[in-house]
Image: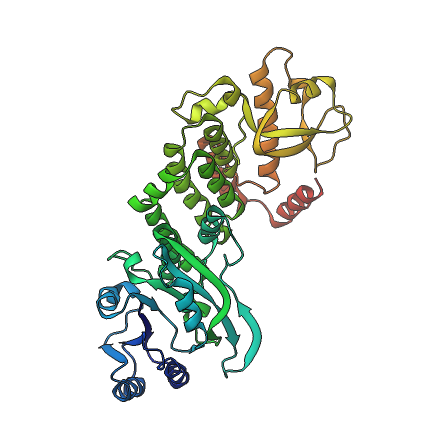
Amino acid sequence: MLLTVCLVTKGREDYLPASLKSFETLFKYDYVKFLIIDNGSAKKSESILKNWTEQNQSKVKLFRFDKNDSRLSSYWNLIKNSSEEWIVFPGDDDEFCEDIIPEWYNSVNRKSKVVGFSASLQIMTSEGSRTFQNIFPKVVDVNDSLEKFAISLHHPPFNWPALFFKTSALPQDIPSSRFACDWWIGVYLQLSGQVLTTKSVAIKYRRHSNQESQVVPLRRKNLEAYIWLSDLIDQKNFINWINSLTESEKINLWRYCIINSPIYGDRIFSIILLSKLYDRLSQSITEQKYLSELIQSYSSLYGVLLYKDQIVNLTHAELAQEFRNTSNYYLDLDKNCCERLKSISQKFTPSYNASQYKVICEHSSYTSKDILIKCSELSDEDEIHNFDIISNSITSYLEDNGYLSFSLSPREKKILLYIRKLKCFIPGRIFELLVRIKKIS
């Protein structure tokens, strides 16, 4: 079993010599080789890399690209063809800890299902001083494989510079992404086999102001993550993995993903990635109680309140009555609510993890912070009408108070645009007065 330590560098002259020196502590292991990708470094760094390679020719291969390309995919085929069975990618500002090598070897040797081994990072300052702070793999204490996968969609599960993995576990084509390729690899490996984790340190990880991740907007990185994780969900191996799960495992995966909202819980990218996952699961789940829960939960993500029998509008499946009658919310009534509203509230059959809303009616003391159900508009006979009134009242409250974004009809949009046009004709003092009145109300 052989390991390639692959350094992809564009040349950080201040830190490169220390990184290379730490590599030399691994020379005593016959099963460790080195592959250097000079990714368009400046003259001084190029010279450092050439000299170090010449001094250690039996252990090191060096390839140079004159033009820098930050995408691992650009030289992935070269790496696969030039490396051994296992590979790890320390940074050119990091220092390798030799003690991890025997632990890695003993942990993965003769274990065919293991495709990855993720170790920890020890943070050091830009000057190389230890901070006594370690970064463990995000899933190091997680035993449930489904929870582990959900956490892996929330944020990268492994520390990239300390992730050892089999090159054969990845396909020939990997994402042409600058900031999300390592994340994608961490998720993909879990579809290919088992990834072991340890709190032992593999890398002394240097933090400094010139790190690329420090100067790039998070929105940009999250977009790349969404594009490539979404692409992964469309791939055959992911679909096969989903289909291999039991019905209860599929719904548990969904529950874990709701708790660990994808892509750091980003309000834009998280919900659209969950939508991709929902599509896969809804095509795969056949057991009615789980399909009903999935639909109810998915509707809640968009702030859509479902009640008795409405779920049939969202699926081709023919659901039994007991699953058609469920709702994704229920009521917590004020003690002074009328008997009519109490009677209606008892007809709610909440689904798993349904939302609870505390409401009052016209028989209760009312403030602007309360969700008011106008019980005078409720019917003694029309049950669906009553559910519509309640659902609309709660939704309006959530929109008015900023818990949900507004959904405007075309007519409402025209009125809003008309008011905006009139705004410039309203004298400043009158406009300020209207703003004050709104705040008071």
